[in-house]
Image (cartoon, rainbow, N blue to C red; front, side, top):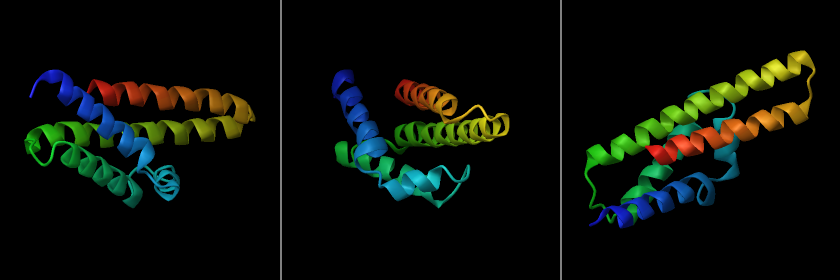
Length: 116
């Protein structure tokens, strides 16, 4: 298997795991605390997507190099969003400024996930 089909499959798995197959209750659960059951379900969805697209023909080390950093990035993103929400609510800066920062805290982890 050459590099391009592998990269394409990983991009599809990432998109499916983060957007298509993630129920709203998992999204809401992930935003409540840094490490919780919703994050574990989210990572299991990613694991299932990768295994399904590669038809279980992928080395476990490669899977762990993809899934574990994805979880760490999501934990860092959730922590940053929690701190920002607390900061903007204390300052009274408003929802608009928090939303602007939320876009950044969304975009940066997506780029990091793709880099891994």
